[in-house]
Length: 419
Image (tube, rainbow, N blue to C red):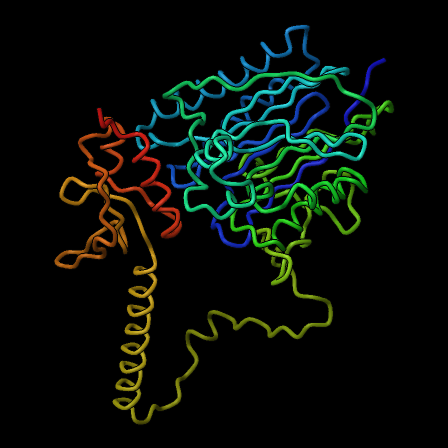
């Protein structure tokens, strides 16, 4: 007997990030989540490129289901390599990838990075994938607990990702599907914040659409500072509704996805997360093309009439000019002070005296003015890095904040050649 997938997918930019570096796809045969690695160049481009390559798997697979999953992951990695080759400025971009391919009776999974896949079966939630992160290695060695890993200073350090350079092999495995199973894929914006118990509680009720929305909402309410992407799919003996189309979300989506209040399965959440308590989807309400009915609108002045209209005699012209100049000077000072204050809240990683250093300020200079200064000098030597990594450090690597900059330094520290 063939089984079917009923699915939903939601991606939210979150409360802190300026852009969504997550991408996701859900279809009748394929579920996948990719998360652009923070601190790298154009993580949004890496994740969307990977998903666009992986979504070609969305058709009923043959017997070699794991071979098809591996092939899809390798093609995504190759596509990222092509992008870097076409534009060397993208060198360093990378993404995680978690892929679940369904054939009507079983799932074939491929995984690389720290996005996750879970199975909710008969009231029990089980994590299927194993994170390729530094903190996961500490958990495996018994040095820290899962709970401690959520606040570990090196929790953002990923050991394996798709970057088009290292060509890492994904974890591959399969398992049989059962009617009533619920599959959950997510970026670390969700699993890095919610406990297993909290996720199980949400996944235990409602439709896939309801569960996906509630998982995103709960992640934001719990304080997630990352993008949040959740895909929920039910395994059913009943065919999916005819109007359930494949869903593309996050950076990979061509246009912002919206739905009216009470919209259908898998629709975007519209204003659901908007506001202080519920986060912000990053969507801006459209400006109406016409004024609302009954609103007062003045008639526009006829251009010719305005051109020839006599002007009233002016008084105290010199005083007006002085006041205008004073106001402009004050505004200029406020703008400059605000810009300087903002610049000193920015961080990037660069080279200072041959050491990988965290700089405070902007990675740019004005004639005679330096907009940054060394903030933290590390013991990571630039000359011990690979040529590609050393070049990236010398050019400067932007960071979202100080913690992100420190995570980038830890990443290069783990990759320096100390032999």
